[in-house]
Image (cartoon, rainbow, N blue to C red; front, side, top):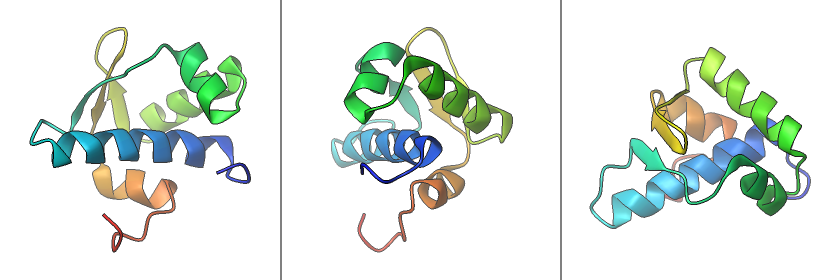
Length: 91
């Protein structure tokens, strides 16, 4: 993960979180983020500002939509997987 650019790291994080929800039989498109942006940034090895910009780009591209403080709705799961550099065969 260390070599991925910021948007790919964020996309992979969101994709993985939604996959975990799907495996648990929960709504995978409505994410309640387990941590604040600063904590996510630290977890991914990014600056908080970089994380915020990457999330804003994903929002502008119609991939995700913020839904409250720590909620995120996945609008385009195929694009999210592509940005996360997931080929779809390893889900």
